[in-house]
Image (cartoon, rainbow, N blue to C red; front, side):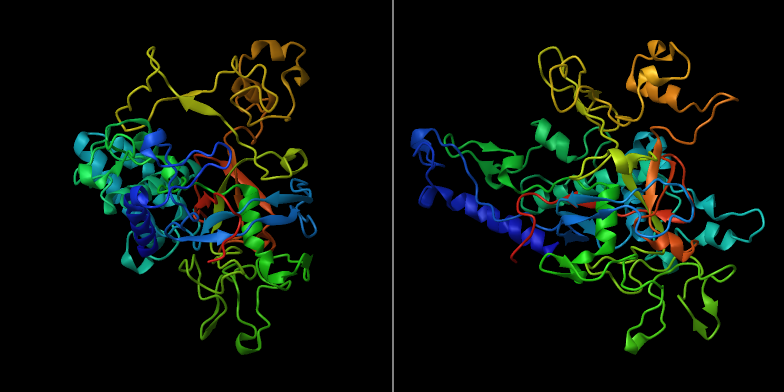
Length: 493
């Protein structure tokens, strides 16, 4: 956090000094930047994107996406293929109970006094996921999420929708802190449900005001204005990683390369084919929290193999070569992607992802963006399919089932005529409400990756993939966040 504050402070000082410094000149027109006499086109100093709290830079590159070992489950849903992933940032650890309790506290403080307790309730993890008809699990039900003994353990019982909302909230709080500590906005001690800070609302509306001598100043007029994305002060959004990003980060191949050669192929986030280390100093110690075998979750008293019958603290065992903890065990993790069995065959070979749904801000008749709703969200609408008619890159807003069959491929001859949207077409292709036809796959089936405390070693391989409905939760699935890397793919600092 100190690095963020220091960097933003230096940037603010640089802005003040712009008028007295020698003006940079455009290489195409010869006109000076930041010169009020010729119009004052503003160009602000920028070195590189700062690293947000909790994140680690993952330098991108090419790797084999998908199956790296025998498909003993015979699901054939992860055909290996070479792809490239751009550089990005990723959480060093899974999101912990303490992290999520901070989120709930903020929701409680903002929404419950305004009689919107439903927002808080919708974010609560399902603490009953621990229960099993033939197992005593009330210890975990009653204490795992809220007792301080477990504050540094990964949060579970969180579904995909809740994880996505947490990531969005986190990005807003980080950007609010950056702006407030530099005086560009004022802290709001009692934020309202419809007016709390969000990054997108700050950039959209002119309703956030601060002391005039602390806001950015126009060079030409001397008037003060809000920070803009062009200033390089705000960070990109926090989000869930894509499946390809998560898998690439889990392997940590940076530690197994020499120039452009990968010296040792990896099956797991660590070297070797086993869950024990061959390091002489720690020889035989476990490198991940997985189930060793039937009925063996932590070993024998006096020498516990992974010292965790359930999840272990988020900083446990050894990090992989990117510095990420527990990418091969502890809890499985949600990723952004919609599940399809054939995704690996269809996806782009640069930043592959299935789940695109393009939206835009809802406009009033006068062209202004509609005001925020009762819970602070900017009203969004799908990008008009009519306006996309002559595009070459996409034609519709909803692309979750792109290349996944088509309306005319239905078994019933005229089924496609009864579908007016992509969503209806998906429901027709993946029926859930009929006795004769039923599918577990639809646009709400989301991928989760990695092994967990409950899994055997097979699932610790990053290339394995499983799926679950986005509104479901379990006692072995958690999540971590990611962020885009803007500009250069690596850093010299």
